[in-house]
Amino acid sequence: MMSRPMLLVFLLLILIITSQFEWKQQLVTDFDASPSVSQKQQHISKREEAVKEKIILSQEKNIQRLNELVRNLREQLIQCRRNNETMNGTVSSSTENVIELERQQILED
Image 1 (tube, one colour):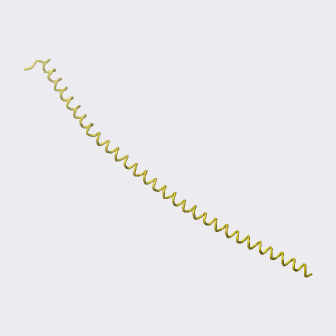
Image 2 (image 1 turned 90 degrees about the vertical axis):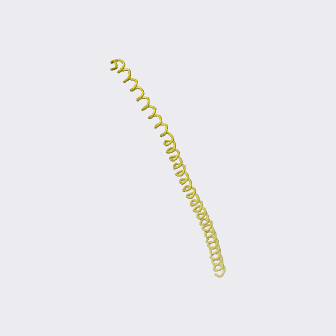
Image 3 (image 1 turned 180 degrees about the vertical axis):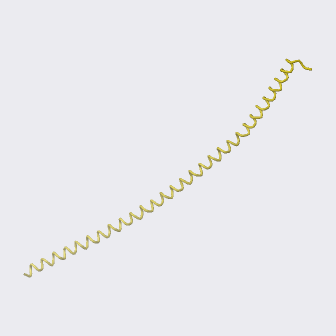
């Protein structure tokens, strides 16, 4: 049979070879997993970009709505100013009529 030191050397070689094989196997597995992780990161990046685009589109729609509201408010303001000018014109002409009537009454008396 084998001597004891030879048996230990043989077992040590088997241990080294198997550990090397396991280490290489783990390295290959890690290397194979890297593209998967990279793909996941790319997928996450694409999702983030899609979410950002949706947010931007939503903000653009909100801006359009706000611009429309501003336009409507400006139109209402212009209409109110016109109404006020008309009312002021009517009031001032009414006031002038009252003053004229009072003058006539004074002159008649």
